[in-house]
Image 1 (tube, rainbow, N blue to C red):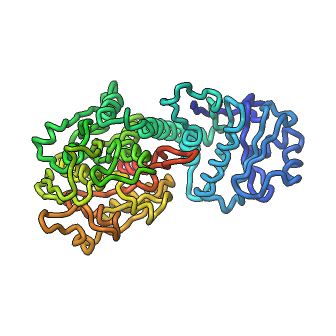
Image 2: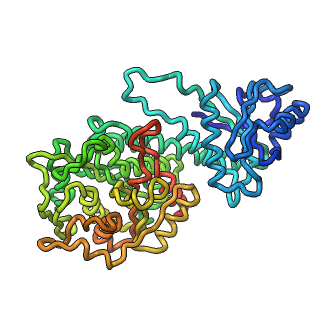
Image 3: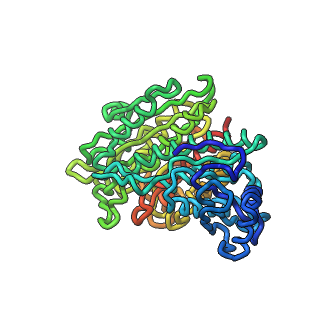
Length: 495
């Protein structure tokens, strides 16, 4: 999709469709007033008929409005002007996108620069519009024998602007397109099936991302390297699969080398059978999405590199495939982590924390300013928070607040849960320093408590995205792109 600005006489615009906002009950925006005047009051007459429903997000399509060059005009109800907040705005945007998708148009002109959300700016409005336009029109067709080229006709979205708002709109377009591009990149990877998307495939995608960009570089640890470094927990996950595990590190240098980097670590289990602790078959196909943490790191690195942020960031992909075989780790096996601590593996389906704990130890060498790991880690977080909020855990109150604030800003929300010391005894093991699971109670919390044992020397946060990262079935099946917007905003805020 291409995005640009457009100005001039709105009525004379030759866009195939113009979108103008209406406020409840019958209050016209400035752009709607301009079209109403040009049409001799036709817009006002239509509104008085009551065809545009009063509920926020409702749309009304008009054809061939008098004295308007555009073939179509869409009126979109934003509700009462004084009540318009960010959540209602996004709700209306999503419904608007659905209305536009139903039309056979190649371009649309959106007049939203005079829309004011509470505590939001014009550039925020535009960035969110682009983010949700891309999400609403995204299709994964790489595996189709014959891709559907008829379901999507929209190619160009323009934003109507004036001299006052032009710079803000351009800022919103730049940030929005960078974010959308990063999310698209990550979605294509996450939606790729496990017979194609292996740890080696992730390494190839990371290498391709860095190619031609002087600010980006990549290094890859093979299993032999991890063996030498003592990453016994990571390797215990890999050993049942014929696909070799890889620890992939992407360096983005946007400022002086002396500036301490922020580190993102993504769980990259490209397919998770559960290992010997085999998962239930009906939903096992969803486990291609157990690498969404790694996908979110790739998407975030793409976004910040495109924006040329003056910051240093390291993205780490802990990539492995968890399979049952004669070589697979058995429940009850004990392994030594890179930190020297030993782990009794009571459940081989709790494998994400095993690759992450060695990655958390590995990145200590970079003297990070902050560390965030991102993982589809526990089903318990889905029970606790559903698909609305990502679970947030941290050993640093300021870091937790910054992440939460970033999520609130972009409406990619996270909710903090505790990792109090009282939960740690649940990980006790009779034969090792710890067990890899803590029982049924507080499963997402004990998983985070396990990770916290490997992150004591730096500011650390854990995002459990099992409920927010993907939808496993239905018409909207696929990776959602979360929490790329949150992570990108957090890094913007560190500049």
